[in-house]
Amino acid sequence: MAKLTVSDLDVKSKKVLIRVDFNVPIKGGVIGNDNRMVAALPTINYVTENGGKAILFSHLGRIKTEDDKKELSLRPVAEHLAELLNKPVTFVPETRGAQLEDAINNMEDGDVLVVENTRFEDLDGKKESGNDPELGKYWASLGDVFVNDAFGTAHRSHASNVGISEAMKAEGKKAAAGYLLEKEIQFLGNAVDDPKTPFVAILGGAKVSDKIGVINHLLGKADKVIVGGGMTYTFYAAKGIKIGNSLVEEDKIELAKEIMEKAGDKLVLPVDNVVATEFNNDAPSQVAEGDIPDGYMALDIGPKSVQLFKDTLADAKTVVWNGPMGVFEMSNFAKGTLEVGKFLGTLSDATTIVGGGDSTAAVQQLGVADKLTHISTGGGASLEYLEGKTLPGIAAVSDK
Ligand SMILES: Nc1ncnc2c1ncn2[C@@H]1O[C@H](COP(=O)(O)OP(=O)(O)O)[C@@H](O)[C@H]1O
Ligand SMILES: O=C(OP(=O)(O)O)[C@H](O)COP(=O)(O)O
Ligand SMILES: [Mg+2]
Image 1 (cartoon, protein in one colour):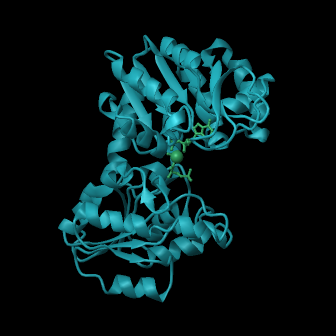
Image 2: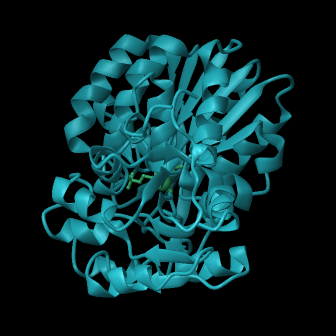
């Protein structure tokens, strides 16, 4: 890699700021899947084993109101990290100020500290996700060197990744890539620079407005693009199919129309769905073909869609998948994701890549992860990387 990496650094007794992606699925303080945390351990261990002080930054979820802060503190994540590392981890419930600065000054070589959710800064004018230069500069001032290991966030230009990197470099200090970042781009680069065909992309999940644009690009690369999960119903709306109360991005319906015109039969949509009266595992549910009845929302793809997707995937040699086919967190709506995941595991001689925080949780929870070629910690990040875009988080790191 032409970028500076963590192994190029002398970290002994240095305050090493590390941006990780600990944006894990979490509910009521319970972590649903810790894959992203485990994936960051090599970089953290390298720093501590070489006598550095590891100061970790991450966002968790999206913070829009003061209330969101209660559900989305990084404290449980810091506690779980202590278990994974089998050593104490200091958690500072602030993103700036005397308490944070004192805690950092009190660190010994080899210590680990976790700073509170960086997106708490978003309540005050989107300072974190808007990459407020003053904030990046302040965070950079807390350390001697910066390591970006947050591949899953590399497509965002945040104060905690791009901002710290830029401020470090402006002060003549270094910003390096961590092991996970390095590993992810090596793998994704190799797999898709010249993919074995047929190449099939599968796009689902809930971040419709973020990811629908990627389909345009994938159409130029892939032989088929399968759309499922929460991504489906914006396309249904564009086709004039009734969607009931299903997830939809009204202002992307026009884009969905354009994509469908361009795609022709390259784009494969579900033909049936599991629909329920509420966003609840125990809600009355049924399979609906075509129109989704009034008062219902689609929470999974149906059995005919599963068969259609299997037929579409049958001879694939490269598959890239981001976004679950349904609300797999609820057992009654996990089947579509499970069936697609299981089928990918049976493809012979194919490279199968699954990316995303929730997609990874899904394939691990459903027990199909081991049969896949590569699990990427990045969903939006891997899609944008595959698109050939320069990821701002990577670009901002120092050159070798
Ligand atoms: N039909 C649906 N309606 C609402 N949410 C859905 C639907 N299908 C999937 N989802 C949700 O999408 C979420 C994951 O989306 P996303 O974050 O884009 O994927 P990833 O983290 O894998 O990149 C999951 O929490 C899942 O419950
Ligand atoms: O979970 C993430 O992306 P993903 O859901 O696409 O895998 C990243 O941490 C980015 O989070 P964001 O989409 O709230 O900026
Ligand atoms: Mg996600």
